[in-house]
Length: 221
Ligand code: FES
Image (cartoon, rainbow, N blue to C red; front, side, top):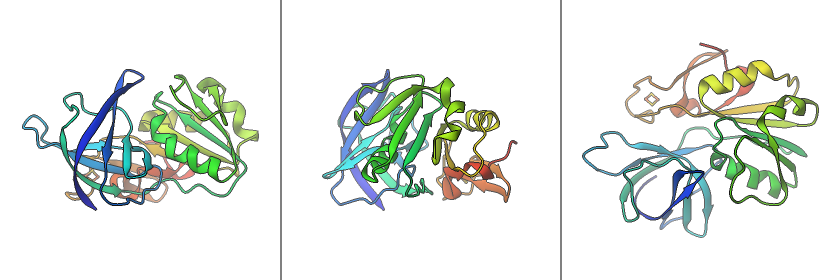
């Protein structure tokens, strides 16, 4: 889907720019999918990768960080949703970990888990400003203790962070996925290869095969 939209609201979340746009048509989004947003500004040659953090009543919330040059009223050409998102199974206990401290990219996922009636634990070093009471916040360092509790684990961070935490966690038999946050300049249109990720099944493109991967499949470079 391609849309021309206006950035109607900007706010700071954890010191980073987040925003909101109005979308004139309903958009079906899976948590973990992303959009490419081009502002057309001469100093922004490449579209920005933006992740939705909310999708309700014609409004789409965009997770931080947004480009610092954007302001309320900035016109955006939006392409998406793109890529493969999270595949949350029907489980009772869900553990989510924001490895880089940005929890907003996981917001759609914890909302989905709560709708399914699951208990949700969020592991992070930065407590988000607004959070449903039902989501328990725990320090990221306590994540290794969760392996016997969670039936589903989702990590979100850069590729080095995801690989480091994968090596520190024991989660046999647990469904586990990771949103690998890395540059995706062409979104698969140009096959630039910048987003290459190594998996047990060979090299994959995060822009199309991810950015959410089965954590068991990811391999170190
Ligand atoms: S971003 Fe270019 S191939 Fe993935």
